[in-house]
Image 1 (cartoon, rainbow, N blue to C red):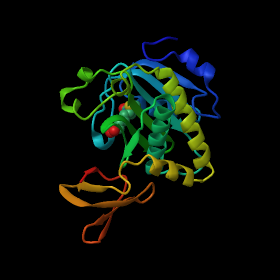
Image 2 (cartoon, protein in one colour):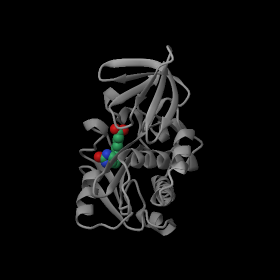
Image 3 (tube, helix red, strand yellow):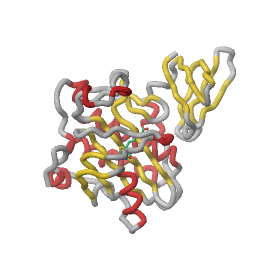
Length: 259
Ligand code: BTN
């Protein structure tokens, strides 16, 4: 099946994973791949099933925001059924690290994670992750792959970017998607045996926030200091100029910018 975005047969032919992507459901257009994944999960979809869509009409972001999905972007959600509980914050980190790893493998770009889970390239947001953990874990990943700046809505045009924009040439979405599957697969393998140190180390290695002087905004208040740690479990630990420490858990609606 060939869609403007993804050559699915190529993708499936080349994939060598234990679980993630052994079963892929492709849709031309959906409301939100997370919604479709939730429905399929309820119907019993197997561990590692991935929902991929060419476009989304009601893509969702974190904290109830919407996510713009232009044709030429990657919209996917993986369904995981771990034996033990995986917290949303851990699932989000898996998705973010997988997106960074895939970008790094397929392009010369240096993806960075702006705490907690935004993927930036050259100071602009290129990808986002929406993870939801209940009876199963859903990790939704959106990457702006071959999107022209003028295709972004006005309100995000200055802050969003795409891989093609940063590279000056198109990227093959199927290759990127295959790499995401492989990254997710290997991270899932480590998490499934209760090993979070690999994820934690990779998450920190991509962090654009760790060690930086930042301003954290939460519920209308701003806090300035140095991000002395970004732990997957605990959150962002800020040391203020007065030497006080404040912890911002990863699931809260906070915004971080350089000081
Ligand atoms: C964010 O940055 O706020 C998270 C954006 C997550 C977008 C992806 S696209 C695939 C999946 N389906 C959705 O509706 N959202 C996620």
